[in-house]
Amino acid sequence: MQCKRCGQCCLNTEMLLSEDDIKRLESLGYSRKEFTVEKQGFIFLKNINGHCFFLNPETMKCKIYDHRPTGCKFYPIIYSIREKTCLVDEDCPMSHTVTGNEIKKHCKEIEIFIKKLIEEAKSRRKLLRS
Image 1 (tube, one colour):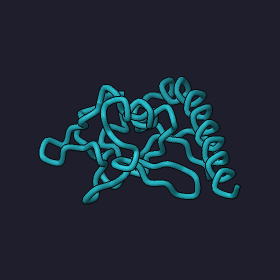
Image 2 (cartoon, helix red, strand yellow):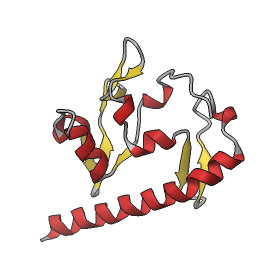
Image 3 (cartoon, helix red, strand yellow):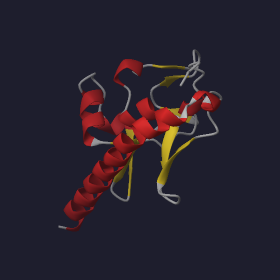
Image 4 (cartoon, helix red, strand yellow):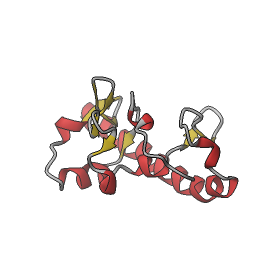
């Protein structure tokens, strides 16, 4: 896959975060409340003015690229819950550069990551009920 670092993937993001992602970003000096939004136990990257909290809108560059969330590292390979498989997000201008081998290679990792996110959300919902 090739990335031209255009920032398209950072616009109106719905990127899920794991606790490991959050801890990594907090270690950079950010507060969880600054960059996250919780919905039904899942934690998402916060959008500000239609873009990811970490996107510099002037340069269209990620402020934390070397420490970016796990889902951002896999992008534009995404998991479709409806189809129960990994796909390439066609909104990415470089989606045509993703090979079948790359999808196959990363899909297992993405499935493991999704299971982790679901377990973390279940735990958060349990805590809210108690």
